[in-house]
Length: 444
Image (tube, rainbow, N blue to C red; front, side):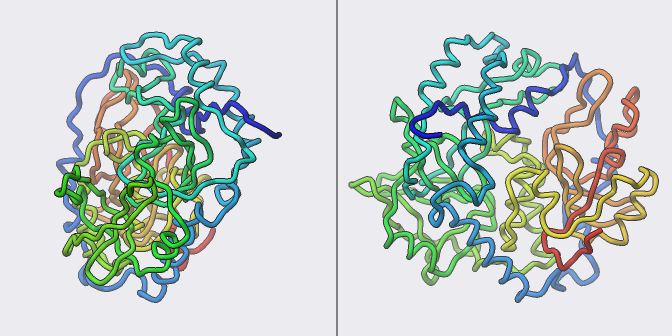
């Protein structure tokens, strides 16, 4: 397949949103779990909170693999590192043209407008990718358009406690994130890019090109990682401030971190900045105390589908958390669940799953998965296994009981809500536990 093709880039994430069931009006609930279980991670620390979850030598090995994935866009000529080809992308996305989408307020999105988006989203699959770097937070869109689109009128209206699933929102980039530019939109305002984890359209103004000298410096310098959320950097000298989220990795030189910005010729140049103790050498030692500090920094954060509003969804939260410890996770929850070692729970009855989880799971280092959702295991409290997760809410017969933020709960969150569908609790729906640091778990 040669030449320029129309790219209708709507990812599997978006198709899942399109298939979401419609909802009705939703009552407001007070969740018993949020009062029963402390909403601070230090409450779940073990007796020796500074004992390593894994030894630092092991972490360094994982961190080296993390950096290989992080810089993959600069070292690849195609998308094979993401298990993607343009032929696969084109074939998959054609189906979206048959879908009726809706704009804010539930208004039908005209087919002519969708066709215009398609014309703007063109790509030469044979073009050589150009290396670049993100200069600021940037939404990764499945089409070159900032306004949201929804897969149903109900989703556009947010009825029944339903999350307004913007099917164009795929992910977000962090400042300093390496990428490759594969195409420019017809209106020149957008780039189609690939990072170490995702592909999609980002605003061209948020990207700068890089040369070999810049890439060598960026890849082979020591690295540091940001351990606090929404750290403000870059103010002064006529520059607008940037807010950097936890989990961002930058090259460093002594106490200085190296922040990219666009030079006069459009190429990236490096500016130094010092975050003090809000950034540490990469990776941070993986201890329960360090883990609890990271979790508390995200506790209560509003839910953000695909990073919307600079907030995290469930898999962005787990990804940023493990990044600090040098452990690379893919972008979506399903891929995260099969990273490292894994124990399947599909053939284990709901009433018996705690008996598998508790003896096998490692607090602060184990993921618990169900279709469409991922959680971090913290341990046992008041006789129940507890998890930290950013969740939109709990299914009910009348729609959705909204949580809408990062919380600690049991796997029976919302069990007290009357009229729930059968087998709809987290404990009923989970299908595996996994260990991103494979040496901590056993493959079943």
